[in-house]
Structures are given as structure tokens and as C-alpha cells.
Amino acid sequence: MRVVVLRSAAGPLRLFGVTAPPAALALAVASALRAAGDEVEVVTLDGLVVPDTWSAGVQGLASWLAANHPQADTVHALDVVAAAAALAARRETGARVVVRAQAVPAGPNEPRRVLWPLVLRAADAVVAPTAADAREAVMLGARAGTVVRCLDGALLASAICDPVAPMVDETRCEPYLLAMSGVPEDPRTAQELVRAAVVTGRRLVVASPSARDETSWPFLRFLAGKHGVQARVETVGRLGGPDLFDLVDRCEVVIATRSQPSCGLAPLVAMRRARPVIAVGGATAAEVVVDGITGRLVDPAVPYEMASAVEDLVGAPFRRLAWGVAGRDRVESCFAPEQVARALATAHEITAA
Image 1 (cartoon, rainbow, N blue to C red):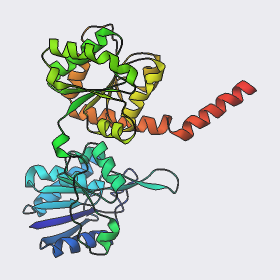
Image 2: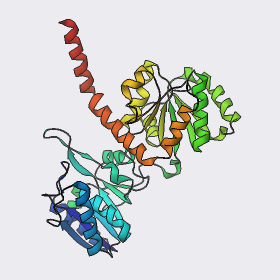
Image 3: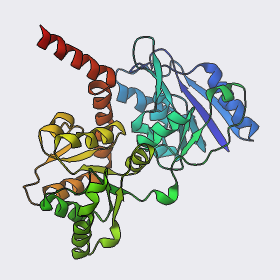
Image 4: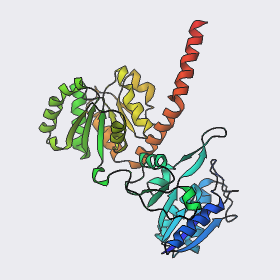
């Protein structure tokens, strides 16, 4: 197999705070691949292009890669610039693209790893150094079965990383809609949930946080039977912790079914896990969900609005990804524990003055 290990320059291609990995890592990757019997060439994109813009720079690198390495079977892209260029060149070369987690500053002197969501779905494989990185890759859109774990330290020691089991069981990866906060008391909203399953052809999973909500399940099953989708409507009760997060991570769209103040947690959980939200409009939901940015607010009194919004979102994968990423950013910036604590302290100081 002919493999190209692609690494961008640390100078003019240092965009958006992304730093190119050390040259030693590129050599270690090449060493590990050669040990597996591959023909490997390390390409460092130093001085090839000085981009005026991000898109022009990536396209220039992609054209260079396609012209100089048309016979490559696989490209291992070690940073986000290289990844974007390799994915653009794939249109001409057809070479598989493997991307690696990126180190991006999260704050002053506090670097953290993030996996760039815009390349995750397009990549043929994602190499994640830690279990947390692998989990984040799945949350941000990497396809099940494409994520493998391999510590950078193992590569630097020239160890060969064996693929690990997929982070998500592929037998459970059929896309579905997740209705959180249980079956709403408003029958119109319950009807819209079932209609969403009808118009999208997706499974509908309704997660109820407490036993009290289970009393409304017979009505939901009645509606599902009436519309002929009883086999595609499931109910899950008393779910919390890791099981709930797993359910959120594997869905396409989260539907927050209630607008009471206590149910603002549903969109927050969805946004924290980088999932787009369709929420029943209300004061609480409007505080959390930014309409058209992190999700959609719908009026339960308007017939078919919820089902139509879900149908539109299911048919727009890039919008789902963009809303999910924007939702995660909003939760981390506005609803992080330290932010909430600071806001409460400030409010206390104002009222005590």
C-alpha cells in the first residue's frame, strides 16, 4: 500500500490557533506504517503555499497533493490543514483519508485536544489518542467503526497501534429521533411526535425521566398504532447518567417535548453532547436554545410545525452538524459550572448592595 503522511507547516499555515505536530510524530507514524509493510512517504508542506485565506490555502495544497501523489492509496493527515487538503484532493485521487486529533488552546496556557467536526464525517478513519478523544469524535459526527485509539506516545516509540473495537456498536446505529422529557401532556405535541416518525421514516425513542411519565405511554402507543408506526416507536423509562448520554450520542435529533422550567435540562443535555434540538417553545427553552443556531423552537399550537421541523432537519446533515457544534459551544461558554457560579455570585452582590 502506498501511504503519504501529510503534515502542514508550522509557519504560514498556522491558522485558527492550530499548531502543526512535531516532525518527530510524522516520522514515527511513517515508521509504524513501514513496520506494517507499507510504502510510506512523509510530506511536510513547508513553504509550498502562503494562503491569503483559509479556503485558498487548502485548495492550493489539495491541488499540489493531487498532482504530486496521484498513486497514493491512503493519506494520513496529522493536522487540520493537512486534513482539509487531503479531503479536497480525495475527489481527484480517491485516496482514503485518515485524520488525527488536533491540539487547540482552550484558554491561557491550557491546551486541550479537540477533533475538528468538519473533517470527522468526511474522513475514512479517525485516530484518537485517548478514550475521551474517541468519545468526542463520535459525539461530533464520526461514523461508528471509523475511530481507533492510539497514543501519540506509542507512535513516538514506533509501536504499531492495533485497531480497537468501535466506540459505538454498529448493530445499534440505525438513526433515530429521541424525544426527551417524556410524553407531553398536550395531545397535539404527542401527535406531532408520532407524525415526525411517519414523515421521516425514523424510529422514535421516547425517554421519560420518571415513573410518573409512564402513565402516558398507552396514549402514545395508541397514536402510533393509529398511524401504523407502532413498530418504530419505543419508550424508555427512568434513564440517567451514562445510559442517557449513550442514547443521546446515537440519535440524529433530540426533541425536547415540554416547555416547563424543569424541562430545560433536555436541550442542555442534547447541546452538551453536540446534538441539534427541536424544542417546544417556552420561556425556558428560549433561554437555552438559539433558534436557527443551535436548534429550532416550535409552537405546539401550530399544526405540523414540529414534525415539519424534524423532517427538514433529518434531511440536512450539515445543518445538524452545525447546530450540534454551535450548541456545544453555547453550553460550554454560557452554562459551564464556573459561569453559572459567577452569575449567581454577581446577582447576590447586586441584591445585597
